[in-house]
Image 1 (cartoon, rainbow, N blue to C red):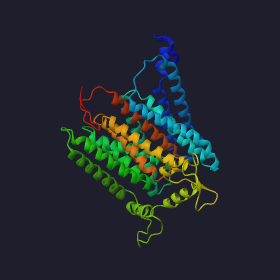
Image 2: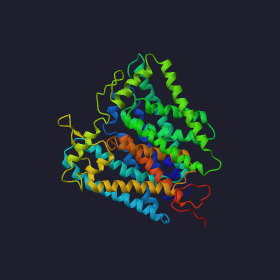
Image 3: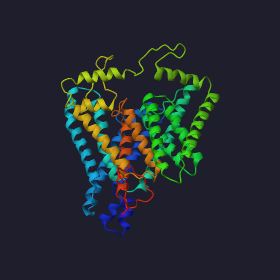
Image 4: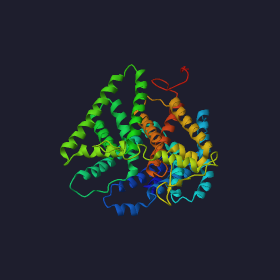
Length: 459
């Protein structure tokens, strides 16, 4: 195909190469290798899948390299012939913060090696992946139409993988061998599909049945293992996203807030109906087994006697205390990227603090907490003040909901060692920032909704 395009194209060679080597092409290659890695999570022969993929996910690493190389070639070939564009002050400030974060990460890498942590390399790979992929995705998205198509494909693909997760969960209740389908890391990506199809169903005017079915599949995948760092943050992300949607529709005379309430009730009834069907079809007690799991993971108590046998925080407060003690004497600058502490119950093993706040505190000290707070405030302000929430609502609110889910989840769990989650976060944040930039540049202010500090005056 490449030789054909170069041989028969009427354009000069430089312009023919421009059509093929684009940041969007690199993004497609990157997503394709991510999908290839995810498909092997469904492979029933676990040892083959793990041996081929490698410990650190070779397809993900190759996809990152390809993304960087193709984008770099595109910049060299294309941008020196392109016209200059004026950049808004808010955009410059945002990217100044991203460059600052990247420099801080590079500066703290060497200091982190002093911790002698065997998990340091995977931790650093997660942080560097996020810092590199986010601006690459931002640069690769050319328009909102392309972004909408990409998000729909990603949501549909994750929904397809969720079917494998459900099959693997159902084998727990059937007289068949347990299928080694998917891994724990995939649980943190399923909410992307759940939130997208949730907003798509609530805001849609057609194809309601299909979108409701896709939402039911995705939400059942999230509830399959009843993981507290997944279920609880997803619940709060859905609540905040719903409130934002109500605020948007409140000012739209063509929309009715009651429509949101009715469709949420329909989705709740659908999920309850699916759970009831599984209780009738599957042998044994489906709800009874999940009741035991709920008591064990959420209440830490015996379901029959109600006697507590564990801590409700899952030992998180103990981790937080150890993290604070380990930073005595270096609270201001931190200990470097990947700094950990001795595990309280396993000798010779290191532990992470299970909190994004303490991750930044251990890495960069009090200064790191200031950087994190400033970054979250900058990202939230930039998105809220520039995104037109009335266009492509399923895509924009779905991405915003997933960013909220990641924020809530990372406050009580490890983010950086989960490379699948980090890649999903980088893709969602990069697309969302580009959507805000495109909306901010748009000259058409009609039928838009932005959270502004002062009323907008049309020119």
